[in-house]
Length: 256
Image (cartoon, rainbow, N blue to C red; front, side):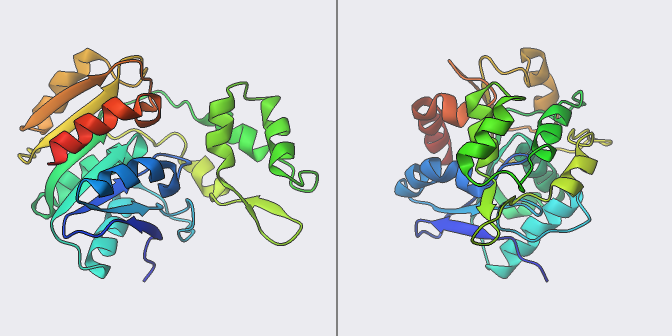
């Protein structure tokens, strides 16, 4: 059995699993995890399959990733479970809440709703595929090559967290790019049937995000019956990084 890799922060009988987004990893959330752990939680920063330090697989879907998390929970004998999911991780968290509502105490969905989005990862994936590791010998080399295609430095920094040394002389990517490329048009979650999750749910999104409209609130309320909605000022899709103080205050208040 393949068990997801994780970094665990804190020591408590209250467990939080943080589910990262597409092309990300648990480590993206380390500063937030440290603060949440200080407020009395054990935080599990998991790497989803084909991401970070977790196993690679030719199979990749939201359903499979929900089952990976279920197996992780079983393996680690976790009870008293809370969950935070951002972007694709939010979709996985919502599907987990639908499939395993009895396992969750509370859930936080960050800047994603269960609706059809237009595919928009093609360019980023093509840019990553263009990296030539025969030429690239440092992080700066990789950044320089990516900058010809991606002008946003923050996006490049996020993507370049996936770099690692395969051996003494060769860099590579932690993500299974070939498989993720095939999945790029399947990143939306659309529920085909009604369900009703009655546990406390926080839906938190960026004021300037292009992923969420206020008109989506009714859709969220139709599935999550005990819903609190928070709009984060001065934040885009990367809510937790754009306005960390506000995000953490609302998150920790809700969890406690």
